[in-house]
Length: 291
Image (cartoon, rainbow, N blue to C red; front, side, top):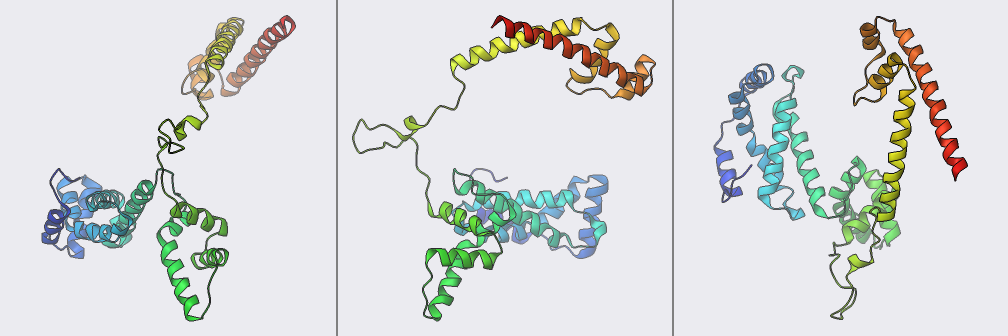
């Protein structure tokens, strides 16, 4: 990560001064990190390929993100590549790292392009980074033929060219063609105009719903406690350990503790559930009759 005042020019100059690793040295460093978690080897490997990360980050400047941020994301991708790289596969680290660096930068660009999430599937990513380029290419080719493509024709040809569904092209074209607007902007030019955020429905739970929910939960908890009290100690223990713990225990572990077979514990669990069901159904009928 960059520090305040640490410019991308400075990072680029330092990266250009880093050593160039031959295949044998690169492999030795990769083994040292994978097998021994040698941080010095990791640092040397990362430093040597920062020029690659910076070079790839520069290709995404046209999306409007600060170069420093792009370099940081590229660095994260480079570190992920180093952590997951398997030197036994016989592939150069630089070849492997390219995918991780590119994926990290693309994810950052898409995440920060708009407040509305632009997309995350492979087809949506392909559209985001290629839509305008392919559209320009199709427009040039159509112009050379003396043709003009309307919106539908353009989107249909883009879908064929990139190999994605037409509906995805229509969605991405609309998103990239729009802009983000503040919900605090007024709906009219009048000084007392209502803000757009005032027109949004409050999706949070209302007070009456909260009170009713707490009331229902209290009754359900009471019924469950009473139903459990109707079980014998062994049945209650099995139900508690199996279903009421954050991580329920296995039939095997309970069988070992109770000195029972796995199948016997399962039978006791089924019987206990039947008792619980009858007790809860009785409570429910009483409430229904009362209402």
